[in-house]
Image 1 (cartoon, rainbow, N blue to C red):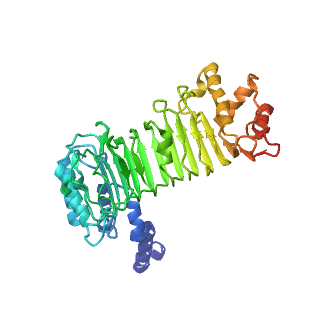
Image 2: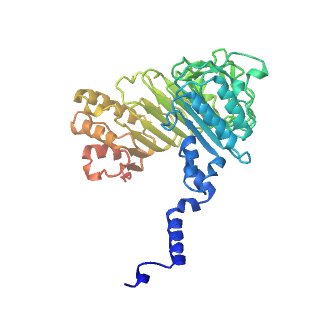
Image 3: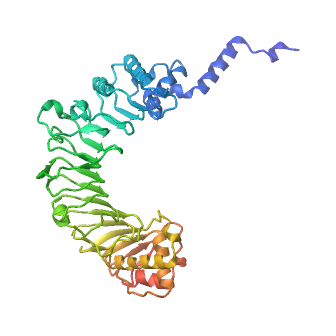
Length: 439
């Protein structure tokens, strides 16, 4: 037997082994930025453990700009002491030449409040830009706002107990000169926060503010944030106050209690372009939307028969371009023309399986709603809406003339065939304008 057919020369064998190693470890040949992106989907402990993969990965975690500390991570022992020791070692061995872009902490288990202060100091030393802290289970003593002071943070998200007691002492307020985005969320085990009058001071470049279960004080005579462009408020009460927000372009109001005069409230937003309203039957009341520059309006509600049509939503915005509605709502448009209307039912509560008499009473409200949307040019419907209208007209109990006299197109959902639409429904949608078509 010829041994050359069995054994390869040593040099050739080494080249083949080296080639196989290179092919198997293609990840290590990626740039640092790509490896950091991969590690950003891991928890901080998992990211550190990638150091055992190869020589290339041994120290690359020490320059990772995205860190997440999640107590639900199964790799962590269930003691806060181990977390503190890990974080101490993390910052001790981390490269001090690179900054931390974002840091997220989701804490289920308790640890000393001083740990947060120490953590903020370490992050500030690394010029942290984005910080998200969620202490959503354990009860902590309220943190002073100054705990989160930073000269580098641009985005701050907090779901922690905070001390909003009125104080004029600078040491008790936060000082965030570069902060552009602030999310404040009241922890679920606490009653709604109430901001103090001074709590939004020292935020000179703030452009985005989200308040979730956080109230503005009733005694606040004026709410002034001149650079604010985006406002999100959820599960809170809106006070009777003067809104001084000339740069505000976008508002989202989710399950909020409106002030007595909605006309005065909305007309204060003179430059508002985008408005989203998430309504429930507990907050539904007469709503007069009169923002002069409004272009896009979204109104979303759960599919509930308890939404009263005794209440009304009147839209008086001359520049409105698009309206997006989820649910059946008493909407009336006092606008010159409307380019796009998108209507969806989204059967999230299984209403389609309700008794027929309940559905018919509810669907009849849709005809009232569509009567107020007659100025639309392009009408987009989802399959639940078409099914509801078909149910009404196929039974022959309802016949009304088409309110859509300016309509150009009716857009059907993907997969729905025009041939499936009844003649009566087609006449209702297109009868107002003989030139209108279905796409």
